[in-house]
Image 1 (spheres, rainbow, N blue to C red):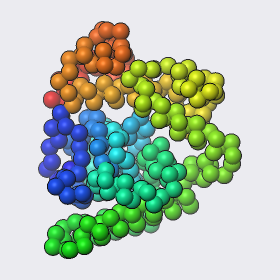
Image 2: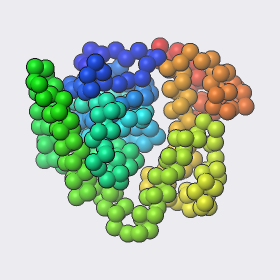
Image 3: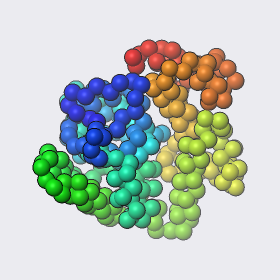
Length: 291
């Protein structure tokens, strides 16, 4: 997965080094700069220095020292404007290992991680996370340990438990979602909107479609999304479509015309104009720059 000298081929998604179910290490993530990479498995990241602008699916955040980033299986990850001193520790784990752990948690926790993947804890909490990376790294390197996989599973579960506790206690956004019925209702609608976008963005790119699916007005949906993310609903939809285009340009040999048909654009020219409007590059220039 993210070794110090790892090179990620543009036609592959990233995943842990799955001769085994997890991988631990540190990286400058130079190979991820400007590249949209889809995660088949799960990753926990802790920034040790420098900064970068990050995207997890269509949620954006600034990554700086002590920022924790949670990538759940099936998400897309991207870095931009990475500084030369940027470093992150990582723990990557298989989808099967994630399923074993996730079954013991309140689904609301993983919904929170999915919709708010960037977490900036206090220095004290970050030091606790850094200590966790040290002990899980020790176990990762101890390959003669007969109970290595069990220990890693327990330590990974412990980190999720610690994260859940700290988010409940210290995350203002989480508290806002849990304190009132209207907020809970809006949180549920927002979650359903995000799920619908991921499932339908290849075909449907208008807010009205999603509002209709949720049986609410476009104005109410727009208000919910803006209250939650401070961005427009259409912005998130377009970002999801662009991520899908970028993924297909990087990870397949499909022609731009074939990508246009797969994503239900009228023709190649329409896709090209749409992509350039949102990225500043033509699809062909983007593909060439990522080779």
